Structure formats: C-alpha cells, structure tokens
Image (cartoon, helix red, strand yellow):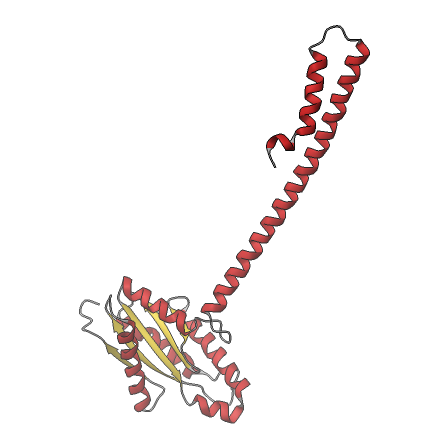
Length: 243
C-alpha cells in the first residue's frame, strides 16, 4: 500500500479545507463548519495516534520480555551443553575445550583423579549412594580449589582439573591438599567408609596438544593405581626448568 493510499481520507479533508480557505466570499457559517470538521478530524487522529503509541509501547515491552526470556533460554541451553547434569561441573567436552584453550595461552598443569574402588561402592550401597558420593567428593574438591582451576567430569568416577599457569610444584601442593581433605574424614554420603582417590598430575608447556597432556596425566594416574591407589603421581611432558 502506498503512502498516498494510507492518508487518502486525510488528504481529501485537507484539500477541501484548502479550497474553502482560498475563497473570500463564503459565509462565516461555511468557514466555521469547515473548521469544526478539521478539529473533529484532528481529535480523531490524536486518539488514533495515542492508541497506536500505546500499542507500540506494549509491543516493545512484550518484545523486550521475549528477548530476555530467549537470552535466559540460550544461557540455560549453553549451561546444559557444557555441564555434567549430576555434579554441575564441566562435562567431558567442555573440560577438554578449556584445557585446549589454556594450552594455547600458557603452560598448564593437568590433574586426573579417579575415585578408588567406586564400583564396589555402587555394588554394595547402590547407585543413588554412589551418585551422592560423587557429588560430595566434587564439592570437597571444589572447596580446596576455591576457584583456582577448572574441574570437569570425564567419566563415571573420573575427573580432570585444569590449572592454567601453575608450575608442577604448585599443582602437586594443591593436589596434596585435596588428597589430605579426602583422607581426613569420611563423606557424609558414606560415613561408614573413607572414600579416597588416586591422582595423576602432568605439567605441560604452552602449545602442548591436549592428547599428549591428558595421556601424560593418565599415565601418572595409572601408576598411582598400580602402586596401591590413594596416592599422587606426577609426570612432565618436558623439563619444567624455570617453572
């Protein structure tokens, strides 16, 4: 529809008023009637404009509400796509991405930990207790980390911790605190038994491939298990030198 079509009625009224206004020999009543017609039409336009403005404001509020909701949904979907539903820490894909990104920026210490004899816990006490043990152990680990690193669940009872810009010595010291925390007291989810974990720690210079970093930490974890579990083993991909 053209602009002319949208204002056809208005243009006709203005044209009629202009015709009357250009004449000088009409009666005062004719001029008055034309003025009244213009006033009434103007009032109608004002009412219609107010209605349109109110409708526009309402539509804008609804659109803002919809945009806010869409943003909330996008954030929720992003969270679900990157976090483990049981523990609310990073899932396997997300922690690998975090590790890869960190390795592209700086040297990194990677910790892989595995809950000792977790299958026995599930078999003896049931999977709900096993899930509770996992959640509480993660909470205890996070308490020691205090935001210093990123933690993710890479398997059923296996977790990875990414410590960007940590030296090997700093990483081992932090892991020793986690290890001590687990050995200090039983978890509330399983008060009758101490739940421990085995740890593998690797140190990697900037630019190391994720596969190499993880393989090194995993080899250290395997050695910790081979030596009896509930212990920490470490491995560097190259000499730590000044680190």
